[in-house]
View 1 (cartoon, one colour):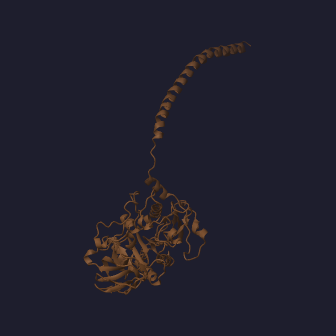
View 2 (view 1 turned 135 degrees about the vertical axis):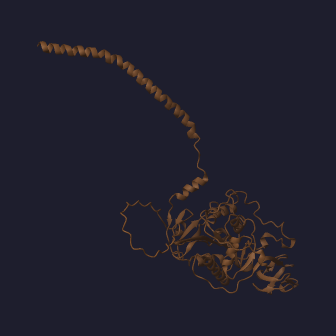
View 3 (view 1 turned 90 degrees about the horizontal axis):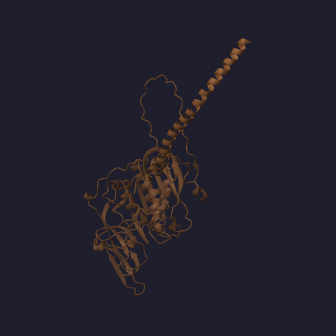
Length: 492
């Protein structure tokens, strides 16, 4: 009992002595804790105040950074199809596509096999690269059809224009073939169809982009012009804030043209004129000269192109471009189409894109200068010469007869040259450009050719505005006898 009472009293004394200690330490600890919390919260609040303006001044990604990021984003892959197979209008609007390829999982490292006996090395076959175009990715060895519809148009509803694409299994340049920028020029439409439908993506090196009808508005109306009566081929490269024609031109230039390494723009004569199959290009540009030499036996005419034409704008952007003129508007001419198809297939061979070779006859001359012979009186014109015929100064080209008075006037050549284009028999007004005569060029005036190669980066047009100003060809720097109205110059 004595021991229990002692132990109990000892425990009680120890517990009472400990209470003041805890009571004295608790307020100090609480104060210290509050001070530490205050010191920690103060810098945090200052940092948050200082960070708020920094968040407001966060830099915005530039358009180039945005485009670079877009290039790395996965796109729907275009499904390979047979281009010559008939399709419905719905399939033109929404072509078949495959889902973007998912990234492959990394395989676990495998033990290295024992080295095999050395064998003769075989050069590996180069693989083509995907072509990103119109919101889709066209894999190598693929033929497909993509829709292009301009962002701005005159009508309420604009039919999508089919863009034919053949991306080869091996790398190479990208050639674009455009037709019907003027809606009444039909030969180019058939030329693109025949060329594109006979390409084999398994053996093609590079890519070919074919646009059978650029000016769908004019084609539906059998008209050279757009529905607002503007000439689309006088508004390139276009302006996003300009006229309807200028906006359509800009859309086509940005979405199709800039992806090309070379362009062949197909045309015919205008206003009931017909043209001998001929190439027009700036022969002071070595890459353009290289293109002209790839067409085989085809007449070449030097022309730097009027401002506002697709050819002029593309060359200014660093894309070598030629115009292939053949035949007349509103009619299909088998000889012109066949010559154009043969010429483009020969060009594909010269560029190393296909292996087929087309035999031609003797090479045609190059004409560095040309001139128009005009009707001096109005009436019915009857020609006495044919396309491609060589003429001498003083030769009779044709006659113009007044159907009321029966007065007949002759048109005689003022130059030695060749008939490259001529008016079809029709009623003409005084001053109508009737005969286009080419004058052969001295060889020293032509630049040496330069290779056309694939470019890693598409062409970029720096000036986006003001294309409507200065889109008409000026004649102040030309001799008086060569100054012709734009509607009668037959320029592209």
